[in-house]
Length: 452
Figure 1 (cartoon, one colour):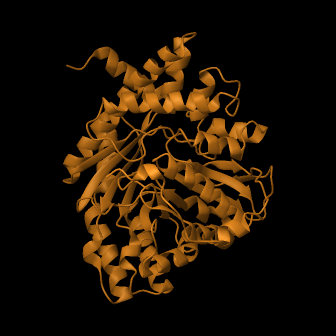
Figure 2 (cartoon, helix red, strand yellow):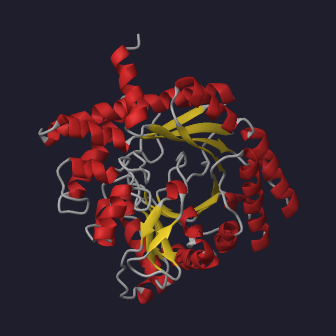
């Protein structure tokens, strides 16, 4: 039986503390779309996405009305497009991106992910074509998101791919310079990319997934921060318990929406992603959670420890609320999408090096960080390599989504709008890693990857 107090508490979370379901993401397999004719291939992809996702936005809106729970984004992810690019040239690959973008606009969804390649051990012909096409694809579309997995704990780090992605990020920034280099906000470089992630820009429909599947991402940083503030002076162990109980309640909301969406769409329910995904809205901030624990500002000494506590407690509470947990599941620290992170970066309390340290204990990595527009491709590759190494050695997902804001310098602000927010341009160590990056090859997998 539903408890009246629990119902009222959930309503208050929605009205006062920014609780929402951040996304329902429909994964769609494109395996049966293959064709030797590039135009026919693009048409097949468009038709498949339209046929499978035609009801997604309506179902999301109906669930919102039924339960009074905001569902901020309705999204689609598809099979990594590189698997379909083996016989295409760059123009053919861009044609796939344009077909995905056209479908996304007609469906009324927020983003479509899966313009992706998996090259942790090496690049196939299709992967090379797709990676080469990414800058043009993101510059000529609005809703397409791209990701490239360049490393895994099992395979090590593909440094040739890391070097290439530095150039791709740089070129993407240049081609979208008239829009604040926003193309880079839709491009993420991964280690250990999960196949069931509902969050953009890294969502793709994994190789082991069913024909279609619904994955849900929840959000509730404001709820967690409010719960800690209400607790007043208490020990860190008590704070961990408070976060666990709050994460349980947040995840139950996500589980409810996921089950309902699965039933209405007639597709399997995949996972609930437990990640606390912040927004630029005041109060809906992971940084504010850390500050509510007692830090003067996010970035102070102790920030990494506080984030570790938060991430662990969120997972412990969430797994009790859903039998099917996956994706990234933890706490996001995207600078441009978190009001507290923005403030800390502006004040100088939070720097790139501290963010890198924090990624060792949080969900993802260096996310939505604006850097000076004159940052070289080699330095970008060095940033990627450092972050990816953290993921490989620690057997966790890490990622890099940096925006070299062309024409901007340290202290400037780049505004992306909506959930992407705004980012203060942060300083970067400009000492060159060019010779190291140019060596290429693979950094071998760590010894603890040999578990068989």
